[in-house]
Length: 133
Image (cartoon, rainbow, N blue to C red; front, side, top):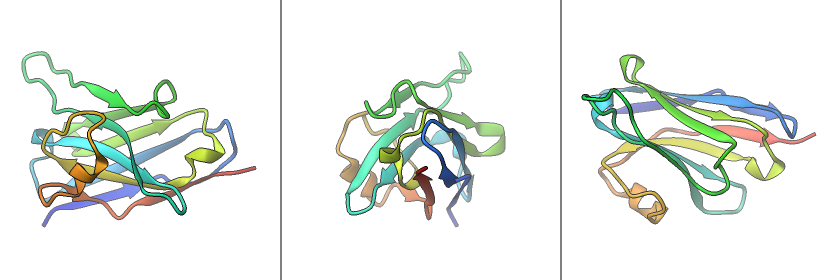
């Protein structure tokens, strides 16, 4: 059974940092792209970041970010631990949302987030991030 379990959310003051984790099981983690998606109160899902699979020859992976995350958030993956991360710095109140990790086949950055709802993608249950003073 595929499982993605997010953790690390919470309440943080503006300008603060949080590190979200996504522990994966039930599939070969290293062969799937990983995504972070968020949903703010009363809004639709918003793509945040993507990490591709790791290149076996160069032992690196590529990352992509939405404009709202660029320069402040960092997505990473540890294939040995089957875990993905989202380091979030300089948090703003508008970052308040439920954050979901998603695994699946490649989806081009900027493609409609609806693509991540196809059956070939797996979603975690989400973790709440609240940025407020």
